[in-house]
Image 1 (cartoon, rainbow, N blue to C red):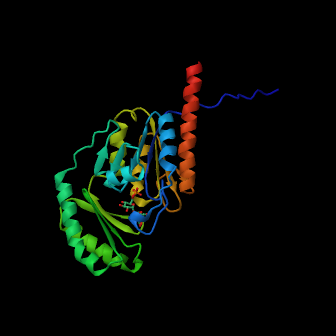
Image 2: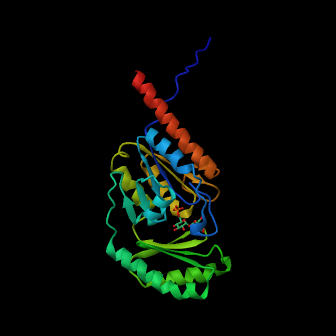
Image 3: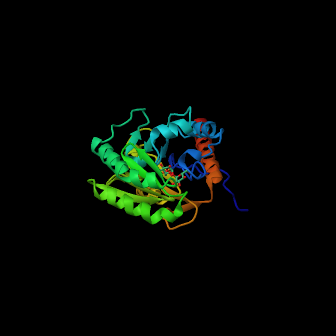
Length: 257
Ligand SMILES: O=P(O)(O)OC[C@H]1O[C@H](O[C@H]2O[C@H](CO)[C@@H](O)[C@H](O)[C@H]2O)[C@H](O)[C@@H](O)[C@@H]1O
């Protein structure tokens, strides 16, 4: 008679990194119109406890935005595409003033286009700029040209296209550099990184996670470097909760031996 080993497999200790818009919350018509489920913060808090706090948000938004949407949580966060970073010990790293000034100059150059086209939305962030055309898709080309002109006027900035948005950020900074920085620190150090995201700006995060022995998980369709895919925001919530449950199970099993 064959013997089936019923012992559950023990997962490596994971560090979970996730994007915010389109991954933790569904997309909306404008940045301030997202619907954040009331239960989300509590649900994340439970999973994060089970993951020994090895959980961070890596987003294009500013840190303050995520704090507001996930209150009362105060997570490790990389904001503005890696320009800002709050470490797990709560310390917020200083943003390079040159990047702050360059982003202000870009926002200033774009301002006349916004005044002439109320359907465009400009988000001036600390060290990066987003120009949204979701409400006026016919202005995509005008938005791209205006961003290119503005970025050409400053040193060392680049444009990353996102979902109905052109984002300007400093060269050499990305979600990948942010993930790598977290992975050099406790409580992430030595763990296996997983990065979950939905957009082109998340590709650097997928690549970094995979180069560090982990996995990128892409939500939805489209070309990607990520090795795995997930269907929707609801499944992301379920995945995070499930990984937390498994981490708790493995820890309890370890305690018994
Ligand atoms: O890295 P993320 O957390 O995905 O942030 C990327 C950008 O997300 C936001 O814009 C996107 O979501 C909006 C709300 O759903 C949507 O209206 C817009 O079209 C999307 O591009 C945010 O406003 C940006 O600052 C982030 O960089």
